[in-house]
Image 1 (cartoon, rainbow, N blue to C red):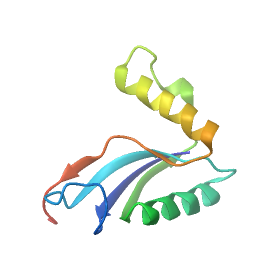
Image 2: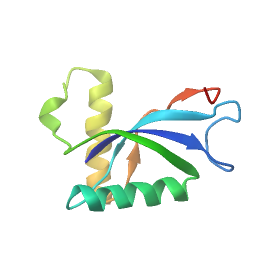
Image 3: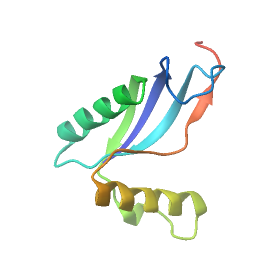
Length: 100
C-alpha cells in the first residue's frame, strides 16, 4: 500500500529539532488496508513519530510510476525493497518548522 501521511516528530525522532513535522509517502506491505495501517502506525511509533493524518491510501501500483522520472524510480525501488524485506519504507520527508 502507498500511504500519503502527515506526521509530527517526537523526542528521539530523526527530524532536525527545528522541524516540527512532515508530509511523507510510505510503502507498507499488507494483505489488506487494515493490516497495512496497523503496521504503519507501529513503525511510526517505533521511529518516534506521531501520525497526524492519513491524506490518501491506495494499493501500490507500479504502473502509475514513470521509469524515466528520478523520483518515481526511487519509489519503485523503495517498493521493491519494502515488499522483499516485508518492512515499512518511508519516502522523502517534506518538513515544516512550526505548528501552524
